[in-house]
Image 1 (spheres, rainbow, N blue to C red):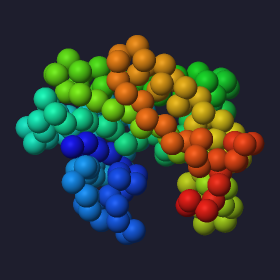
Image 2: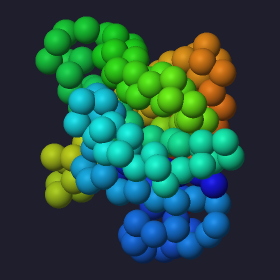
Image 3: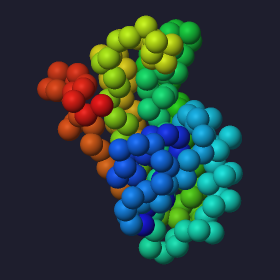
Length: 180
């Protein structure tokens, strides 16, 4: 079984068409932790993960943290502009902070998986402008940086990294909106 902890994006693994936070298959168990972001996950939400480890068979099950999409879509490009630094700097900082959770889980004997970020929406509408920052091209490039850093740390820590990102974009790194 794979135990998915995170924000509403855990529903990706529910096998349900609506947001139910309940998995409709035997492979995934979902734990909705509220509106979480990767940047402060360790400080604000990781204790909830640890408190639920009693529900997990650490010999056979895996844990993954489903966060990062909101960071890539909104917070990271905005912070890079505010701080006047390259996108890679804020992405690496955020991913490094998140991986404190995976390192600690490994110390506890928990098997981990890391899923890639998915591309951001290409849809433009005034109501969603407050929930996205910058162009789709820039946000998707941040997703690419995110996935590269996650993959690099997974290789170092011997954690499987599963990426579906390339299946959701065009050959120009534009989001294929038919999947949204």
